Image (cartoon, rainbow, N blue to C red; front, side, top):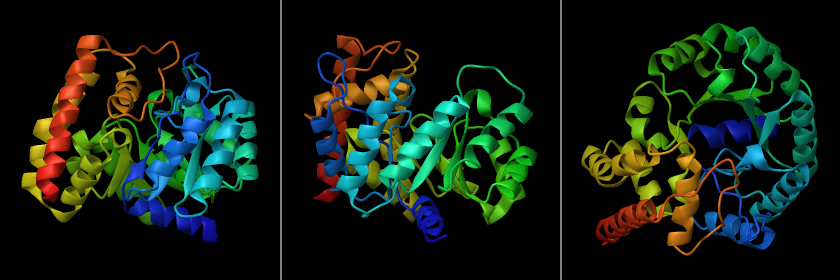
Length: 310
């Protein structure tokens, strides 16, 4: 119960960070670089660290890579903030990932939607229930892709799975999300989780979603923190300036090709000297022209932070 409450508290207030998974030049997991990344994340003001997430290419990781990620992340974080790791794919795989997470001392799980297969909502609900009832860890349900549940399904899961602690919205459908929030109330914590969640963070906040996952934190952490603080403080001029100068142009760049929600993040880390290698297929890295456009956005972000902190 203490772990569950600690996770709830961390998810309720503060910026959530989702580090990339580092690869070497051959596309293999780079443990040394990953350890340095987690340590660097801890130098900034974050309330939780989500490892092996969507930004961390969970879909492409082997169980051995996942094991190294969770054990090393927990060791480095050393209890300073909660560590959350992903589980999912098949039920069998999800159970194996959950067992590794428990052994490592992870604080909670992010339950990804079922892999590839189209399914009815009742089937997705059964999938989630099967996995959550196989672990004691606090679990966040990721409402996205082929695992999108409505309020009535989530109410059943909340009733039958005491360890369901939060909902991460990956849809951006504010009407449905508002229905869920008004139906389940404070039984769950609600997290914004669309790609580049800053783009609809104002709408999220208006219906009670106080925080979100920030992928751009990987390469412009101070800008991400400044935006979040301005949002929560009601500093509309700062929020609008960052949206217009960085977030909206970044989203336009991200929309040029499927998968760029991850690929551009990795490109950004290289630009700022925190490179974590390339993405694994089937994702593709941005073109030189797109990388240059991203570099210009990062220059804008750095100038903004310098001026804002002066």
